[in-house]
Length: 90
Image (cartoon, rainbow, N blue to C red; front, side):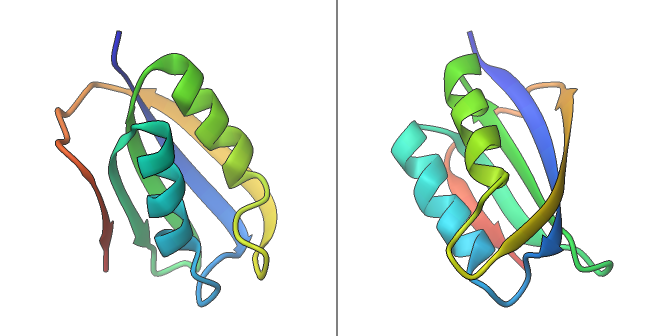
């Protein structure tokens, strides 16, 4: 069963390849959706896929790529949007 989650990642998460790394992780986990920088310095990730893969993505979001410093991850369930792949958005 496909589920939807929105992750909002706080900390030093812009300028450290967080979006690109999240795309690689999502593809490894078979997730679809996107990652986008926000004006307030956070990163938003919308992801869809099986619950176990979304759980693994949430765990990854708590550490991110090596140069990141994650202070907080907010997670919200949502309606499935039917994304076909995972992309990096601006």
